[in-house]
Structure formats: structure tokens, C-alpha cells
Length: 200
Image 1 (cartoon, one colour):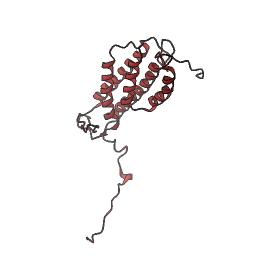
Image 2 (cartoon, rainbow, N blue to C red):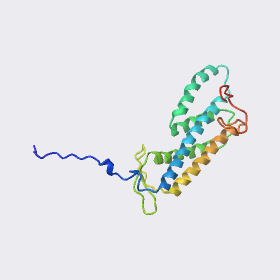
Image 3 (spheres, rainbow, N blue to C red):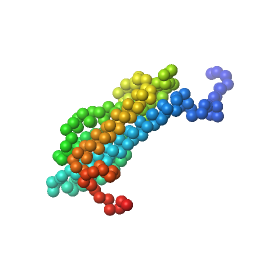
Image 4 (cartoon, helix red, strand yellow):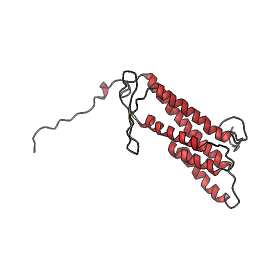
């Protein structure tokens, strides 16, 4: 047993740099990152509206109607708070289950959505390391397969991700409007799926 006196330490919060731990990156980097993350948030909303669209416009036989109705509300509630990965799975199933769907490249679209979901997890959940001399940073991120992300990311990389995600949003909207339906929540062309009597 040692008789040494235990020394305790605490972080001097008042001495931290302003905006720690993000202070070493340029403001432009955080703006790019914020816009990309916000675009992914909108993708999630668009997917949930597309799920509503495909499930609401699917035709059911008389014997299927009650079960479909009982399952519909829980499915829509999950679509409001599900993760991007699960939304993609539900969206794909909703498209495939609707015989009126006109999209011909659903496999390709779903593949791109899943790839985007992977980089979204890095951008949203990575712990950003100090930038190099060109402003690029490698986020500390390990996925569920224990793969370590090792790519340096800069504004140019993030801007490409944001643009690609915006294009995916348009493709998801197209899967609904191509059938002649108005995309829910928009004032675009097409037949309204559900006319909300309480909407002003």
C-alpha cells in the first residue's frame, strides 16, 4: 500500500478555445458539413413521404383491406422516426409491393441510397480530427463491421456528397410523380393522394 497522496485533475473549461473542439477547422468546413447533414435530414423526410405514397396508393383485395389498414398507421409512425437505413428498406418494400409502381431501376436507386447512408453515418457520427494543411480531416468513425474510416474529407468532398444526396431526393420524388401522383407536401403536378380536410 502506497502512502502517496492522490492527485486529482479537472478540465479548465474557462480556458478552452472558443468553439472547442471545432475551433481548428475553418467556418466554411462546418457550413459544408451542416448543409450536407441537413440534406440527409430532408432525404429522410422525403423517404417517409414516399413510403406514405406507395402504401396509400396500393390496391388491396377485399380480404386484405382490414389487415392492411391495421398495419398502415404503425408503418407510417415508424417512417416518422426511423433511421435512414431502415427507411430505405421500408421504401424499397413499399415500392415493390405496389403493382402500380413504374420505376424500372429500383435496384440501382436503392443501392445508391444505401451507399449514401453509409457516408451519412460518417458525416453525422464521426469525431473530427485536426485538419491537415489543405483543410482535410479524417473523422474517427468505426462502423458495425468494425471497419475504420480512413479517408480525409474536405469541403469539396462534402459538397459532392450534398449534391449527390439532393439528386437522390429528386429520384425518390420521381418514383411517386412518375405514377401521376402529386408528391405529398408539395404543390407540384399530379393527382392528390390524400386531401387533408384540416389543412388550411
